Image (cartoon, rainbow over all chains, first blue to last red; front, side, top):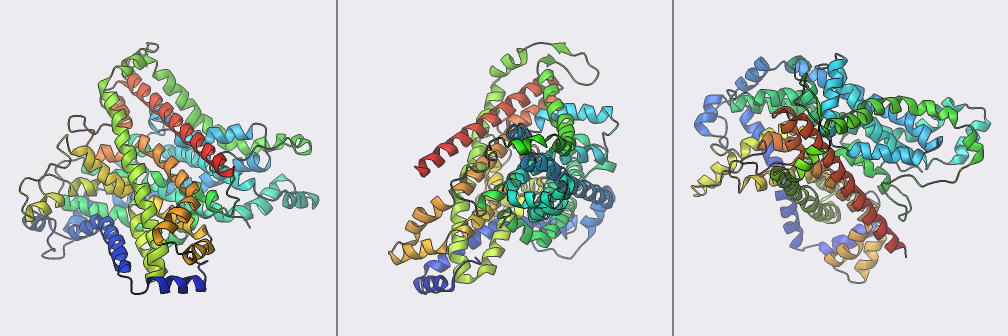
Length: 289
Length: 332
């Protein structure tokens, strides 16, 4: 939108002014957005009800009184601070380590152009498409053999590599656009390979890498299948897995699960609001000018 | 699941010449003797990821392949070599074919509907709402559509399982209040459940194309629209003649990543229906999971997972080839 010129805006205004269509379009897009948001609104509405209020008045009624009973119920059953800590540990380590591993590998592929680099990148791309089902059983036994089952580090190792493969794929293609002259100038100044990476290449790629860190954090936070299998013990569970384990127990009040869902939702929403600009920039990152 | 490649499209939407092959490999280069000489040292930079890749992807994948050639109930049970028996059994397994057939519905819900809706919503937000009501309104609406994409699938799945519940689900209650006394059992009726799941998947997915396409539209030169407007082209003609061709690379990225994702759908099925009722919503990934962890038919589960990988690679290759062909056509 930043590129919209003043004159264009003026033309558009002239053409559309007074058109009844503007309200029709706004209404259509607005209703769509409302429907998208509706499940979340329902969640908030019902998380603050007592269970008797819910069973008497149903999910659509306004709460008769503001109640934190459901939250207390959830926190009594799930060690939420521990789950939060596990999730933060896993996501932060994976985001930073994954991007670092990707940067190193991409340096060898995009700048070093080691033999067979095209094939390596193609294999890494395939790896990002691989269904986790085709890895899970050996990973399960591997983690068990190493004593890492029910340890957050098993999930960390798996996702550092999987996200690292994606980072390598993305960063190596961006790196191939770094001007050769820049690297040669650095080499003439006596910079060795490591110095070229950290002082020349890394700063150029910083915007792309920061976008990757944000995405890796969210993707890892939301991961479901591999953590579900590798982290069966409540002490090692992440926020989403703790919620889904609890839901499997039939005797739980719906309001309690509602409150748990809301609690599990809050960290990602905070993160989303903080990094919204990075996320929407993510799509256009990689422009090296 | 599918945001997974939002950043992947990154490079596509930057200021690169449009005729460059997208999303694929970096262009092949001629050997540069001066550079080749000093390459050995670069292998060290590849080593950490390389070792990790062997341990976490390559070795497990090969082991899975081996397991698929055996009969194994898991754990310390004996492992019996059966050759290709599992694959032969799979070809004759109705439940597997149902699961593969259901993947077509997943493609409709994850690729087709969201991509079409996404183009329309993105164009409306960028081209209309953004100009008429301000960029803030457009950004707010975009964020709303994107919200389901950043929510943990466990949370999203729970919310929908509750909304679609047959006894006191919101859908059912609203319909009852409207005077419909016998609303369908959204997740419990074999004739309806698959469509309910599709509805949830569309909701989950829609934000991804909207965000990507809106970013793509910012790249389009406004002068193209101005010229078309001066020539008297209406909104729809501009949409068809300018918007669609200009964002074609992004459309391709969305279609490719979403297709791969739709062939891998797992969590929504596990949480919403568990493959039921009467196996009507089973998908390959869930069928593999069930064989691994519920039926203790590990060899068979590994077979399903291997075939799934092949189907995904094949679909990706077909799409990449199609795209290369249409790129070539455009350049001629």
